[in-house]
Image 1 (cartoon, rainbow, N blue to C red):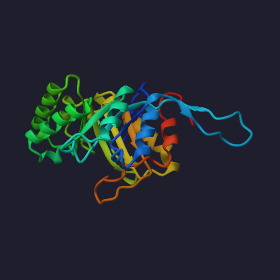
Image 2 (image 1 turned 90 degrees about the vertical axis):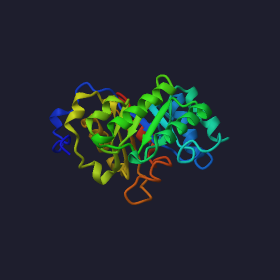
Image 3 (image 1 turned 180 degrees about the vertical axis):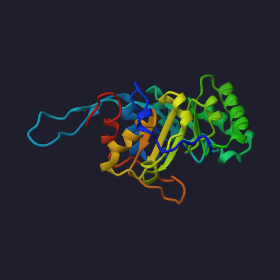
Image 4 (image 1 turned 120 degrees about the vertical axis):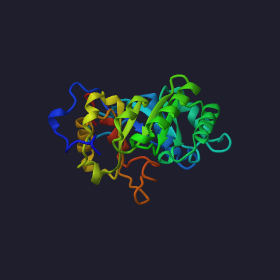
Length: 274
């Protein structure tokens, strides 16, 4: 693909880039992952107590509120067939904090009919009052740009100010940037991320337009992963030590909290350390 560059030259790292934020691509259903949704709510509401470090100390510190940019609600590979009694209150509590809640729409790389996607969007808006949509398995090639542009326009007509994240998982044709609020330009394993390349055209856009999602990141490499995200110009990230449960997919990696969640969110933001 001609719009990909050679491996990243650190001299073109963004200058004056804003602080990183967290995007949560989809915890498991609130009934199956109550702890994850409770922790998401605590982070969205503000500082929480951190455990004491070492012995003889000065007491526990406070973890600054994480910069939560958005969280995805995926009821049943979409909105489901009826309002879910567990998701409805969970969605309301997250939205009350001001964090964007995004409904999960699976584009199937462009294979799903337009009418089905719009129908799912209607249900998300009616039942969960979402703030926008996560377009999962969004196509990347040039031929599908008109389809996705049309869908994006329809979603914004349904919900004024709808925030749209295109879940490409890799660098798409640059034409997609015209319709999205944010593009997921990497979603995959740490083994691939640490040697990843960046598309040259991304340098024409600010960091808040890009998101990186990485699974299988060891605790000892968390800071390195954050440095890569900053160098490559991403404004939103989600890193976890959980691993994908299926070949060629990130299925299962995002459903539960990372083992180092406190450490991860403490690294997010300007001048923040654990």
